[in-house]
Length: 329
Image (cartoon, rainbow, N blue to C red; front, top):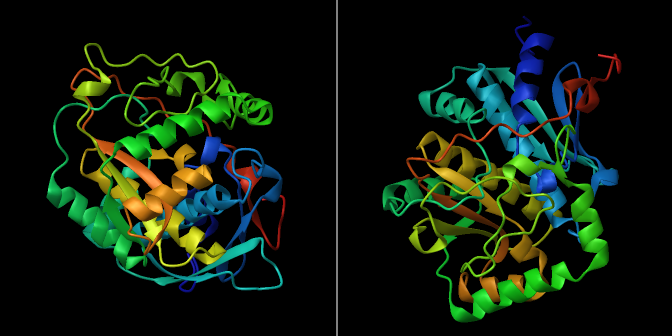
């Protein structure tokens, strides 16, 4: 191993963890290029879901989550990362550069990296146990270190009604439904949301869920939406630039991994903020018009009888990682 840059085996180990990041519809819209002294993240514009995510906000948040996963992985592997975001204004698809120097990982770094393979998007009901305020405080602190505000969301009639209207609108949008069907209900694909990962949503729940194709995941026996005592968290940024959205993705990763390390279940909620009216209401009701909402996350304790969820598929590293001096690597 070089004293100035990790060897390929170490880079591949870090990239294997980075590509475990969550992404909208599990599109995995990123590409990594490895130089002799740095690691580069690019967005894959052809994986932009133009009907689900017309302004590309989910796209950048997804890539931001992968960026943070990579930072966590390199840190835990003994390489201290420094990140430069949007390093070349003339190349907007070049999202970040990670520069590395040898370092000594600390226990929190190792705990977050260890949470990456265990994290799942759990769309099922959570148990009646409340999420401890100390756990939420830790998530809030880690989001704040990335410049992102975190607030708990108290659902009210106006927000719930608007959310249901948004879900109903999407259910009548043929282009949206076609795109959703392409990217969900899958059984053997390397991307997309598998049928085994999605339960049939309860559209009478206070927070209605996205209606994925071919849902076959059972709810834990005896659980209902009324028993779910999970918390809904909102991440917000002071402005709404591509940089803010990328950093919101990093904070999303930090919150998800922190929750997983604490033993909690999590589920990013993207459909609500894809609707401009819903996003405006969250901005006013949750952030007092001070922050732009970028992500909602459900956090809670899984019921004791909940079966473990299988991991969702990922594209092979060879499809998303290449070296500048050897694109076949």
